[in-house]
Image: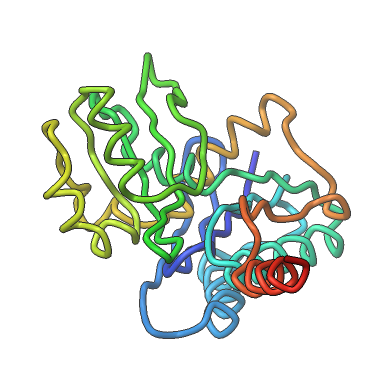
Length: 237
């Protein structure tokens, strides 16, 4: 089985092609360019480099969220367009699950953090058991303080990763009472390779959706929608 994997849910843009248990190519960029500038050129370069016929892929995997609203829309639109054109299914992988999968085999708790602004993070808590990713806390958008309280209550050694770590590093170091560490640079951000391996497991279990049905999962309203709701609430009150 061959998969094209795409993740533009955060600061990182990343694309990979996997065939069974082999990663044929991975292209990851974390630089000051928009995903609309980088994603398609990255895919085209991989396609040319490994002489990929897109008709030979079995599915398109994409990070479905949470994450940046713009980034998720770009990734989902790209995956959806390819899926419709190629008549291929979509495998929607939760962004936080894919981030946690970067640390496959880690014996500690794994806590991906994505900056959700306003002192909040998109986060979840995971661990591995016999090679399987176990979800201890489902993906959610919560205040950083609430996450710190939760980790302290669990009392487990934890590894943090994601673009929320540098933003809230001081809060973590001031508030945590458990032993903790940070993922190294090569595993600290989104990796399409990890997303693709997880997606292959989904594909084997038949967990796919049609391109027409695919849509991102934002977990919460956008800032514009929240501000509009606040204004309407103020007017009604």
